[in-house]
Image 1 (cartoon, one colour):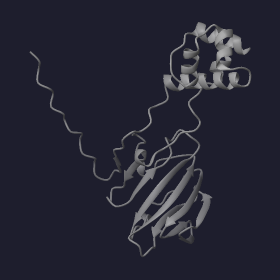
Image 2 (cartoon, one colour):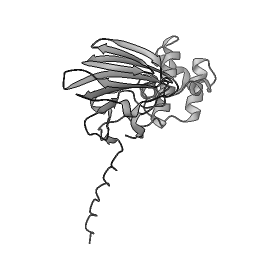
Image 3 (cartoon, one colour):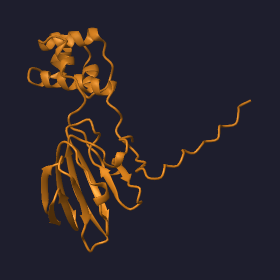
Image 4 (tube, helix red, strand yellow):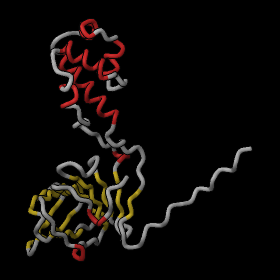
Length: 225
């Protein structure tokens, strides 16, 4: 006799005063075994294409063309012994196949996969448009509602910040400087200087691309997906 399915308990509400991270679908999985296999496969493919055909490598290594094809396409799970034979046929030490095996350096973020964060006012939000915060920089797409002012949350942090106004008009305050930024304007500055933004546009909202290096997540939110 089967037991009744457990009732799903809803997650606790977001505490007041903290940014809310909107759920996203289809976020890329964390690097793991699949990435390592793909890394080895790319190295085998790059070494082979300059020397021989897939059929020639199959003959020299004594490995089926099907296995080689799957490996070069990032799938399969060849044994160390098989990889050693492949490396020998390619004229390299087997360690060469692993030394450079690392997650892909090109990572695509689809529009529907972006991490979206809504600030406590419920109107101001931004999206993180890089895969994660482990790289050298982070890019945020900000949407500032009409009348927005960040004066009460002025920031100062190590690094460099770049702002490009996509739509509307923004007023950037850096220490005692005030810079009026229109659509298409861009500015780069030392983020250690105290800075904040005001939406001075007559539009209902303004949008800006903000790139920071090293990366961080504004508003104290965690970078969880």
